[in-house]
Length: 402
Image (cartoon, rainbow, N blue to C red; front, top):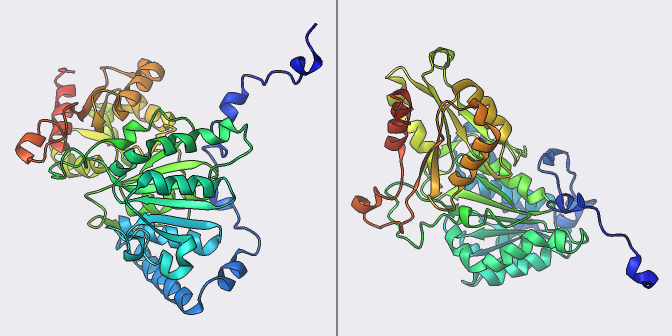
């Protein structure tokens, strides 16, 4: 007969595995999450008044830019980071060249305002400082890690995997609030070479427990950064490296944005839909700008698109995609990752599995070739897809070539 301790406790139920995927449900409303008790008093008691006044003046200036529609993606993230660090004294920030603002000013004024413990200027060792952030997250802090370029995070792959699995492997005993944010992706004519043009967002799609987002506008960058910082699990936000300073717009000051939703950026006209002349186009990062730039060319031929920005890469918002396919019955994916193992491959598979009844043609993937991304633009055109490829795909749908 087996000893009592061998029979007790009963085995955990199967449904517990899914429950331990994320500490917070993907549908969480982060606007409803209050700051810690006494947060403002703690911040003011532990911060130099003059430095705090400088930070608050900088925040007010950025908020004014956001309201006027003149804030950049980079400054929108800096605004979100500073607002959350002012709001919650357990929030800390790590970055290379942090005190100098790094490459895009994302951590600007963090160390000058909150000191070296809350604003840590890190050595060029991504695994090292991401590992520090994991320890902070397990001990009651809320770390933010800026990757100067998200491709550098490949040197922290083991730590990212650990962060994603910690909540489940500790049986839910340790939450893992951790926000990783940085510029990346692969724009046409990027000229950054192979090492700096890898689709790291695709590399981490298979790590359990991660929420992965992509923001191609100041509004999305700001609202999603705030939500991810308040989330109690690990989140990774990718930003378009070639749009960080040039793309400007509005941001809804003070508002957190859902991190589990797509965004219908442009809706095809009812006339184009009724005539079967509309196509759903899914994209993210630089692909959004590419699609917007060729939209007039598509519409000039009497065609149109439902343009959907995939702001949440994981989990994927299949509801929004399905609603669009119910109108257009055709879909192309402008994908900033490779043919093998890319984001578009996952999205395409889910569409064929869950929306096959709505399709009049196979999914058209416009993804990067598996070859390394060349530095020379004359070679790069063979690897990286762009707006002209979207135009051709839409026309091919109409000509029944797909």
